[in-house]
Amino acid sequence: MTNHCDEFLATIDKRLDMPLDARIIVLRELASHYREIRDELTEGGMALSQADEEAVRRLGSPSNIAARLNAAHNSASWKSALLAAFPFFGWIGCLLTGSDHARLFVGMLLGALLLAGSVRELICKRHPVWLASWLGGAWIAVIVAIAHFWPDQIILVTSTLLFVVVLATVWPSSVWRWKGVGYVLVAAGWIWLCVALMHYHIRPANENMRMAIFFCGYVACCLAIIGAVQVFAMRVFGDRRNGDTAAASLFLFSLFAGFYAVLAFHARGLPVTGISILGLMVIAFARTRTWGSKAAWLASAVVLTQALLMTSGRSFDEQTALQSLVSGDNLLFLLLLSLMACVCILGPMLGERSEQKNRPAIVR
Amino acid sequence: MSAPTELVKGNAMVLILSCLAREPMHGYRIVRELKDISEGYFAMGEGTLYPHLHQLERDGFIEGYWETTSNGRERRMYRITEDGMAALAHKREEWSKFQANMVRVLNTAPEGMGA
Image 1 (spheres, rainbow over the protein chains, first blue to last red):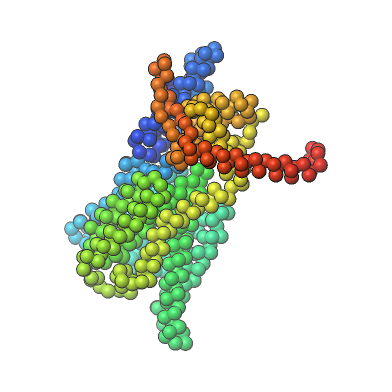
Image 2: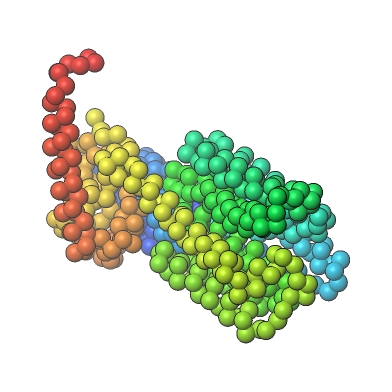
């Protein structure tokens, strides 16, 4: 094969993100197609060098072809899947570090690495599968850092930061703008009302009303935040010409797994086992091809981690309101856990179907 | 004159299945057949055919296998499956309805409008 074709295939190979066997088929197939065009052109009297150039031109843009093949295969290579789980294993490494100071330092280093890697990929307009998980990991690292340095302001600072990021991301898109604004307004309204009730001793007429506001606030906030994060995921990963809703799903899954690990395992002194299970689940989730198998891995992650929590018999070192919600026997928490789990699969899957359905019949 | 790219892309599935319903073919031949039958109207991007083929294979509408020609060249051939035939029949019916209604509506407009 000639230089032009080698270059074309090398560019495609570099951008393909799928299991090795599938990658080999794609490259062999494109090489075979190239040879067919070239031979036809040379039989028609064209010089070999010209025929070579023309054949590569007719095959089209390698980055476009690779992006569309990635979307069609919907499954990550082992390298990408391992990179997707890196935030979780990095986190374990951080927890195994000796002193508190060293742990904080390694944690901040890991967070900075994840953030820098994600920003670099976004600036270069590349969307590898692992970017989803790195963004999720970077986001959790930011929240953990805020919790360490400004523990009293954690809710206000993290929620404001989340809303700014969501609004900045969805605003340029006419499809997602008003959905994002709607979720952010609902979540912000309830969060700030609840914070005002907690910190500034604003007393409604009676205690029942105060509890009702907290309860509704908790449910409404969680629903609105889940909605806002989902809109963010679909906008960043699924709203492209060759949108990849599997990456949106992986982002939601890794974010969900990260928060779950912080709340459920870290607080009970079981971080290494719990985070290892979730890291392995991220690899499996990234490698699966169909929505059905993604759902099966997600269900396995929830069942395994809940079983681990129940059999461990560990209790929280310091019981806080948030931790008591994660105690496993709380109906509200289980309801929200199921909802978040569903959102990882159902949101992107339905988004993909509705996008296809909304196309005019003639181009469906 | 060739068909608008978006139209070809949106209908690639039905175009490919129609070709494969006749006999198994490789990617290059599918592109040639579409171009020849439509007298150049369906000029599909040659490289962009493969994402469609792989998607159809994943959906179970076609299956691919390697074949070595008499001159030792290898090609990946595709053949339509039963599910693919059913999907094609469904699409054909959808298209007939669409086309009939489109013509009916277009015929109500006076000729030469906007010329």
